[in-house]
Amino acid sequence: MQKSELIAKVAKTTGLSQADAGKAVNAVLETIVGALKAGDKVMLTGFGSFQVRKTAARTGFNPRTREKIKIAAGKRPAFSAGSTLKSVVSGKKAAAKKPTKKAPAAAKKKK
Image (cartoon, rainbow, N blue to C red; front, side, top):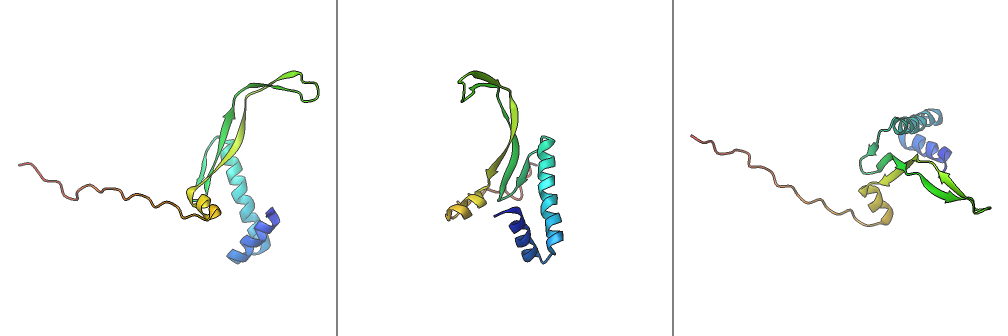
């Protein structure tokens, strides 16, 4: 699916015009990019999270000459899929969460 197809699908689903849906999609993408640029992590519950990962400096080689070159440390964007997205794509049911034990409502008072 290309961006134009995504915009068309959003427009159809929400009842917005193509132009308004395009503005909404672009606003979401620009917000994610801006947050990553600032070093923040973007978490969309059930869908996944976007974050910036740092890469260490390393030694590589030029494939033509086989000459060793130094590759500087850097940053790269990364996406981790959420459990809901994983289960929908794989066709498996998501594992049910274990119920948590609640603290007793009324604690006994000492006299």
